[in-house]
Length: 114
Length: 114
Image (cartoon, rainbow over all chains, first blue to last red; front, top):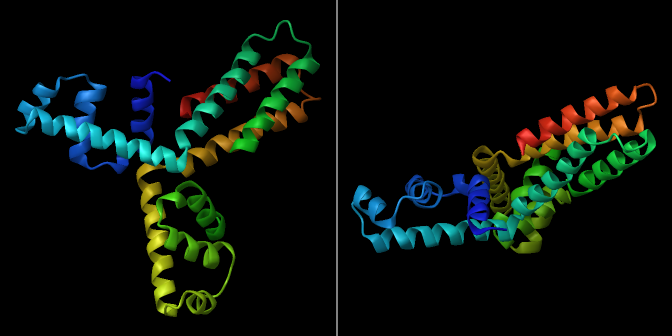
């Protein structure tokens, strides 16, 4: 997965477990693409301080995922629901029986993961 | 939701964020239904100690859910995937168009939540 997408997903899932201060810095630098210096000036801390903070946040978010695997689980489920959604929109070439059987089998797979 | 089901779900999602000691006590008492006294004897701690530990675990698990809402999200998605799965198994009375349109609409709802 592309690094920015991964960071955004991890932050979406676990960001609330960071402190308000960490979230502010993380959002400014990683999500809103301000430079380390801009954020450092804004908060009156060193550039290195901002950098270390981001590093600690990334580590914390990755540790949560290593323990809970919820991003991985939800990405898998999303991919399968997309397949069902696409099937329903592009099913002209499928017989009714093929359509029903594919929807049944993919939804069964999702239920086994949930 | 029934209390035991809720505790099990919360533990499934966030249990790995508890310490190994907490998990051991929580599994014995809440999931495997040993008595407080049995677990206290086994671990050489007081009955009150076991009780306090369970209370702290429940609070920690509820705090994670209050911040992340992942169990709530998951329960919603599971209910909708069940609807799709049931549709695929009990669609004799639906026209092809009704079936496709319902599957499309429910899968769209899920994608908006994910």
